[in-house]
Length: 345
Image: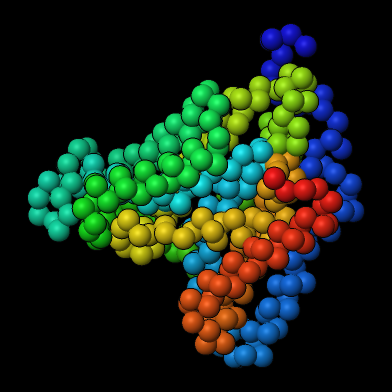
């Protein structure tokens, strides 16, 4: 295949059965819907615990609280399917909104003074650009300098968290431009806008991976990068783009989170990366790349939220809920190991 062959053309040449997403239809559908019975059981347990569990207000609140985590899981699932992982998404959630607010807030008159650079509406594109920059740097270090992805993103997570504290001085930023907080607070057609947007992002992601040729290339790269490269797919460029998109989604999740809470602080995203991995793993996304689906990842988020909600109605303390989160991810890893038959590295 010549150098002029595009990644799109090459992706078309890959047999669908060689990618994880397009495996045997029966097993694929079973894997994608495997969490639905567990979700139904959790809903039944919650209803037995309290009649207030099965109310529209409770489910609406649960959905809204799941939106930021869902966007983060979408980002991590894309990266994992491509055969990589990104721990720095947790700090990007915090860093991107803080830098955006720091740049546009006025230099005086607020508890937290910014630089007064540009109009307030510029906070939104700046937030997304910060996310893109973090993903681009991660991609450079991993793909161009051949550094270990786990260590790179772990170092980036720590560095970005420290950078947030340097910028905001450990303060919580309460002054938000209305345009920046809009998506996290507003309601469309009786539902929070963030829920609609989150659903739309998953539909786009599922369609892209399922029917778009570049999406199939992501599965091919995660399943066997050497074979994908031999087939003419531009592996390095594709993975780099996936890392950038993942970080931009994390920045967007940070904007939704900031808008919903009405504040931004260094502690906003603390611990979220563990929930992200828990949701993706129990949703069937392989840690080895090339397998899993975004729909499965979404059911992983909802299952995790249902577990937390049921435990909360059962008057279990937040510390114990954290214990159950860890337990769930370990059990999911063991189940995934024996159902897939492949060792997890």
